[in-house]
Image (cartoon, rainbow, N blue to C red):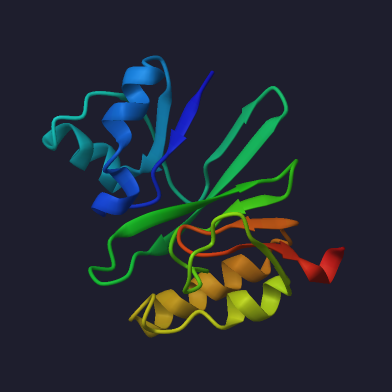
Length: 157
């Protein structure tokens, strides 16, 4: 089974979904419950896995755990995804870094990056602290950032 991950409802996260669905028409879209209701309203017909913080998708060698967080600006429900077997965290916009991240992978500590998420990303004190607590409970080997540079977790190398 093929999956397409949509972290939250901003055009730079879901805008190309029709192209992916044309290429992979049987793919399931992993998204938040909010996104699963929004996508049909945008004319996107797909098989959605409406995820929340308790969702684990297991198939073959994949064990994908979703973690909810209040997306910046509108504080809508978004999700990040942690593939537990490979140790890859798909961090959406939470751990982005400025600059052109193509062909470059940084090496840095995961916990300091997680702890440095600011109110600019989550302008809600309780939501920010809850998200940091959730992120501190995992130890990814690699962070696939939504924008900018991806990084290898130097703390566990």
